Image (cartoon, rainbow over all chains, first blue to last red; front, side, top):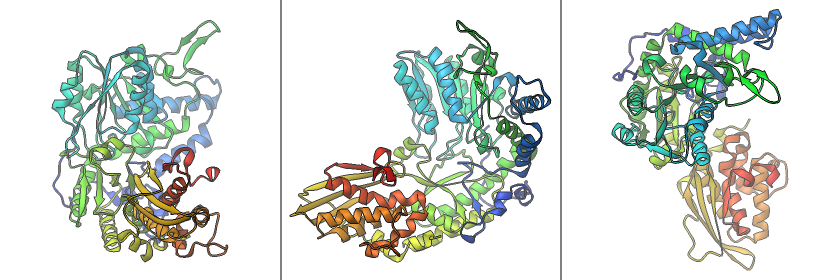
Amino acid sequence: MNAPVLSPGKPTASLDVERLRADFPILANVHPHGKPLAYLDNGASSQMPQRVIDRLVRYQTHEHANIHRGVHTLSERATAAYEEARHRVQGFLNALSDREIVFTSNVTDAINLVAHGFGRAFIGEGDEIIITHLEHHANIVPWQMLCEEKGAKLRVVPIDDTGTVLMDEYEKLFTPRTKFVSVTHVSNALGTVNPVDEMVRISHAHGVPIMIDGAQAVQHMPVDVQALDCDFYAFTGHKLYGPTGIGVLYGKAEWLERMKPFRGGGDMILSVTFEKTTYNVIPFKFEAGTPPIAQAIALGEAAEYVRGIGLEAIAAHEQALLAYATERVAALPGVRIYGTARHKAAVLSFYLGEVHPHDVGTLLNEDGVAVRTGHHCAQPVMQRFRIPGTVRASFAFYNTFEEADALVDSLRRIQKLFA
Amino acid sequence: MADSKQLYQEVILDHNRKPRNYGALGAPTHRAEGLNPLCGDHIWLSLRVDADRVAEIAFEGESCAICKASASMMTANVKGRPVAEAQALIEEFRGMVTGALDPATQPNHLGRLAVFAGVKDLPSRVKCAVLPWHTLHAAFRQQGTASTEGDQDPADPATH
């Protein structure tokens, strides 16, 4: 599952990037400061292809009603489309059953669901939870809150100077009190691809269930949850060319069955009296209230769109782009690259000499280049490298080598300005 | 729209390169620490106030160019001024970067500080420019620390 390591240079095109770019109207519609847009902030949120936009419009114009209980035509259409989306996501992750696919708001919501549904049921005083030093705040704070409530302890796997998780240290952290592991698949701040196959194997060797945060992974590489054998996997729609407000929690049915509901309300029940409520079956037990129906349907469409292009081809293009951009940015005087792990997704995080990342971000925008600057909601990673933040260029399959050149040209101009 | 081209003018780049009054005073009467936890801008101000006048002022810290230039120009501007005038200037600067005061059309004492007027069109950078001023405000009130977040947010009119 690790991304291939390619040498720098422009490869023969395995993707027709120009044709694919035409699927994304926003890439041509927006000209920051009159310049062509080079959208290199895909790690924060990716853009939406016309096919997914059209699916949203078709739903709202031909199919919308509330789901699951209506007896009229529209409710039946909406229910069928919503459940078809679940089925598509099941296929996208190669889950065993669509009962194992829970729609959430985003990855944060999915992790909170597991922290409550699993954590509050099975983790107690003195128990231990393992995370890594690479985690996004979304995979730190819910576990800290659980630890505080239960008197449990958070154990953190250290990383080395390249941003690689120290696997020996990971294995050493397991004790008889270890009850859960939650690790990111790909670091949002540094791009490191964690050896999740190995992490799952070690976790299971100690009899401990493991959750993978796939927010930065599913858009970059094929993910097969059955092959991976993880207990939980989460990703979000808006980083996979879908809408905001929709995320996915995959959980093995055996766990989801045993877990407590996260939120109480409509749709997650079979029957309610003032004396007792019987909860619905999975996955509905975890989907209280009217869900983001349109967003779920659009996410299913986005997953099909990405499968149609092929994640192997996407990975090959993005890896070539990353190698090219890394080589060119690293050649600028005084640049420090953060995240030099052997296996990386298309994330390039750096510091431009003495120029603060926020100044770089504001000035790149002047040249039409959109990046993220700051701590990327991963403050422990920044503390590890003793920096306030980085400039992060994060690539999608629709990005071009010319856009990497635009980034470098603009960085040169900024260096001149600050010389 | 005022863009960053107007913001990153030579005067700001110069103060970033060669900040004025940089360092820490030996025996300050007032001091405060300013922090923007979101971007990591972190400055320390020290002042010697004598007969209600800012006799000496110095700053140091780690920050972006906008914050450092703002701090440098602030110290140059308030040094030697009565405290009351410095406090009025704090309000004018806050007004300018939040769009409440247009230095081109409304009476003010901002002088060359008007180079920061363009910040009001870059919402993500307002806090960078205003942090030193908020820290000065905290120093005068002997508050010790100023933050751009929480109930002390200087860019939030409700806390003015």
